[in-house]
Image (tube, rainbow, N blue to C red):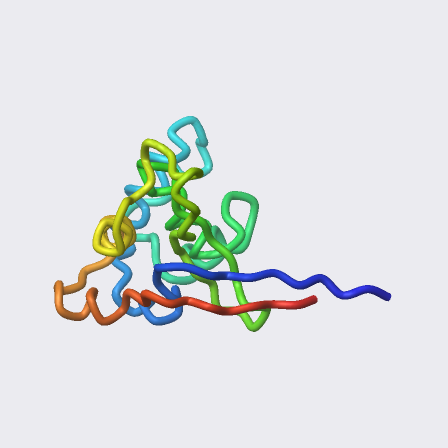
Length: 145
């Protein structure tokens, strides 16, 4: 039997910490934007879409976890996601060496934080002070399975 290890390292948000700020109506709007041709989402409206439906989507055919969902909302395409093996997922930016920095990559800690904040704002009702506290500048988690 072998073990598999992985790292979540960077600047981002622990999804469990932000879960209580999720606005299900905003989440549904963003999900429909991501999958405009999926008729399965036609049955959902802001009135009948709640946490249980959201959770089914987050751990089903469309997303692996909430971190996956958030990373897909990143218009720059530079955010990653992962989990620590204990059920907590992360959406984060992994800093790279300067020679690997792409056109869409942030060039400072503040820019990386802003990328994550922009994604969280799309689906959460949260004030700026709380959002600043949720962003972790030093995510360093590993998982194994």
